[in-house]
Length: 150
Image (cartoon, rainbow, N blue to C red; front, side, top):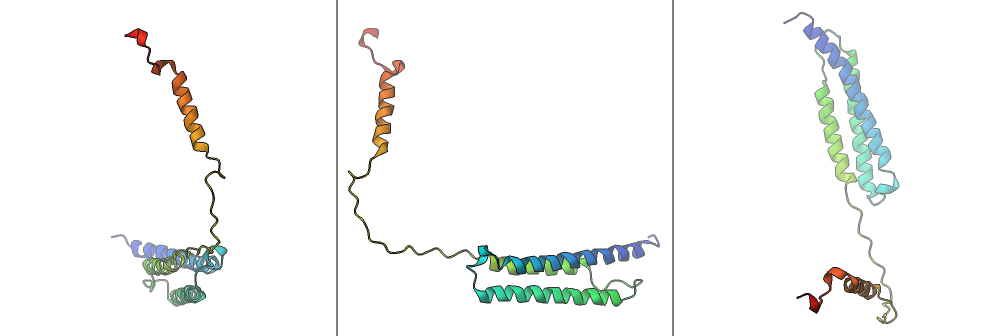
């Protein structure tokens, strides 16, 4: 074991936790802004408020951990790790995605007066196509049955 390994690992963890905190904060802010878009209008306001509260609480807890880490001496093992931020990120993603993935309600069809349409009122293009297809097969020389070629 080299002497510099623990020092280097603490340095890497220190840098990585700052990056993980920034990612977590950005994700929380993204969820808070996305929930107000037109795409998610179908979600109840109470659910949106829960999402915003969860994002705010996650960011606040994350900032507290970072502040504790900064107040700690650099030669000590870190009190917060990247793994802790990763688990908070997964927890936030699951919570928010459960809310945001709720499907839009199916719009109820408006009751309209039923109009009776006569079949003669609508032109039916399909029989015309069938006639064209049969006309093509009749003129095709390969499908003709000639009695003289027995």
